[in-house]
Length: 194
Image (tube, rainbow, N blue to C red; front, top):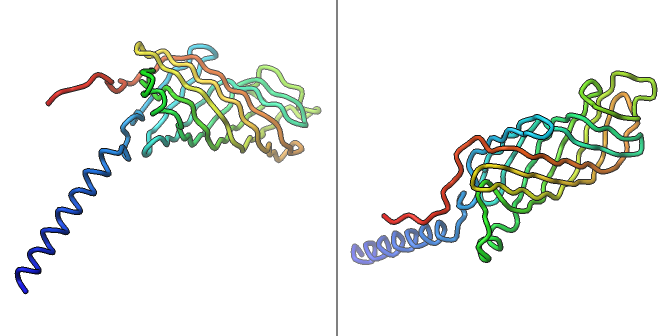
């Protein structure tokens, strides 16, 4: 009985060790994604912080210029953005030797953006109401590229629902384009030998 117990214990430890090794080799951790990325936007000053959560998924928040258009009209100015991003082409970019530094990939995401009237450059929404705010809830498709020196371009377009307490709600699209510099250290993509 003791021999069978020892054999079962040995097999279960070997099997679990193999599963752990297989799990890490397949890249279920933050293999390609930056853990922390802080970007200072140069064109239309602003900031963005992105946190790598798990494989190919990040959460980000930013305060940058954006353009929104829906049934009530349009607004161009600053907005507070929050995103959950899923980067879908890291492996394809690696397969053709393209850069993935600084989360350089294409993504789809869930989005929320809040616009306030005092920080808008131009709009035609107010209808005599000089103090309005509205929020965008929807999906976005975006492209982010960061070169090895840290310069970053992020462009996204989305469609969703616009909600407001002072304006009529409706649906429409959102456009957000930023150019900046990543202030945090980026992962090295050069191979290391132990």
